Image 1 (tube, rainbow, N blue to C red):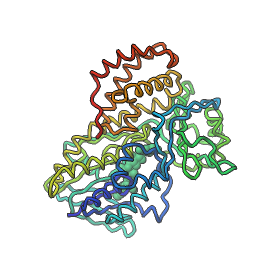
Image 2 (cartoon, rainbow, N blue to C red):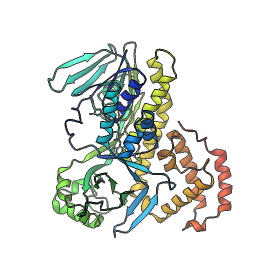
Image 3 (cartoon, rainbow, N blue to C red):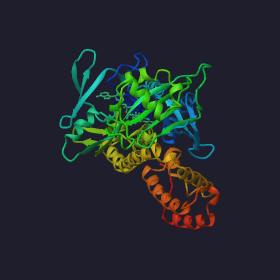
Image 4 (cartoon, rainbow, N blue to C red):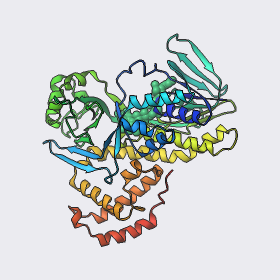
Length: 463
Ligand SMILES: Cc1cc2nc3c(=O)[nH]c(=O)nc-3n(C[C@H](O)[C@H](O)[C@H](O)COP(=O)(O)OP(=O)(O)OC[C@H]3O[C@@H](n4cnc5c(N)ncnc54)[C@H](O)[C@@H]3O)c2cc1C
C-alpha cells in the first residue's frame, strides 16, 4: 500500500521521509517545479527560526547535525530604539538559542534525504481536490495541463495555508472552518554585507525595531546578509492621529524614505537597496487558519491535513514550521503505536484529537507574541520581568521555565505552555509590582508565590 503526501514543502517532505524510513512506500506530489533546479520566485520568508521541536524531528530523521552546520544561533533579541540605542535581552539561559536557517536550504536537504530513502517526488503536479465518496484525489500536470485522478489511500495533505485538500474537506458537512486575516502584512528587505564583506550588525541576535503598532525584524544568513521583515498594517490611520502608518501610505520613494528616516533611521545606511526592494518585493498577508476536524474519513477516503494546511498561524513566535515538524513526529509516533498493518483512520483520528488543543494554543500564543514583540519589548519593566523569570528558572529548574523557553527550548505540549504562562504572569505581576530592577525583588515572597505555583501548575512532561 502506498501513502500519498501532497505538498513537498517543509512538512510534507519531512513526513514523506519519516514514512519512507519506516518502510512505507510513499509518493509526494508538488505543484511547483523542483526548487533544486528551478529557482523559486520571491514571496515566501527567506529564513526561519528553527528551535527545539523542529530540531527534535530533524534529529529523528538523522538530519539535525547537517542542518545546524548551515544555521546561525540567535541568543536573544537585540532591540533598536529610534535613536539607534541597542538593548539585548537573552531568549533563555546562556546555553539556549534559536537558529536562523534558510527555508530553501532546509527544504532541499529534506528533499534529497526523502529521495534517498525511496520517496518518489512528482513535481509540477497541482492537486485540485478530493472526492470523499469515491476516494479520488485530483491533479493537474502543470506542463501538459492534463487532469487526472489517483485512487490510493491514505492521503496526507501538506499543501500549505492555501490547501486545495482543505478546500475539499471544508465543503463536507460538520467540518468547521475559519480564517482570520491580520490587519498587518509583511515585506522582506535585505541588509547586505558591509564594505569589508562582513555582517553589518551582530549576527548572534534576532534584531527588532519595535514601534508599537508596527515593527521591523532581521535574521542573519550565512552569506553575511540579514533578511529583514517589515510588519505593518495594510491600511494606516489616514489622519495620522495614532502613529499607525500603513503600506497604503508608502506608495512613492519619497514616502518610503521619509517613513524609514522617521522610524528606522539606523537602518537606512545599512540598506542601500531599500527603495528598489520596497517597490519590487511583494507584500504578503498573514492569517490564522482554524479547521476542525483536519481529517476526512469515509469508507473510500482517508485524508489527514498537517502543517499549515491544518493550522496556519501568524509568524510571531517563530513556530509555524516547528509545529508542522512536531505534527510529523507525533503522527509517526501514533502510527508506530499500532502493531501490524496500520488502521489509518484510527491513527488520523487519534492524532487529531490529541493535537488540536495544542494547535489552538500555539495559534493564540503566536498572536499574543506580536503584541509582545512590537510593543512590550521596548518597555523597561518587560526586561526586568524577563530577568526575574530567568532567575526563577535557575532556582526552580524543574518547575518554573519561562513560557518563551517552554515553547522554543522544550517540547512540552503548547497547551501546557499556555497554562504555565498564565500562572507565570500572575506570579510576576505580584513579585514585580513597583520594582524597577532585579535587585529589588523580595526572594522570600518569591518562595511563597512558588508554593502556590507548584500546587496549580500542570506537570512539564515533554511530548
Ligand atoms: C513571514 C513568515 C515568517 C515565518 N517565520 C517562521 C519562523 O521563523 N519559524 C517557523 O517555525 N515558522 C515560520 N513561518 C511559518 C512557516 O513558514 C510555515 O509554518 C511552514 O512553511 C509550514 O510548512 P508546510 O509544509 O505546512 O507548508 P508550506 O511550507 O507552505 O509548503 C506547502 C507546499 O505545498 C505545495 N502546494 C501548495 N498547494 C499545492 C497543491 N494544490 N498541489 C500540490 N502542492 C501544493 C507548495 O508549493 C509547498 O511546496 C513563517 C511564515 C511566514 C509567512
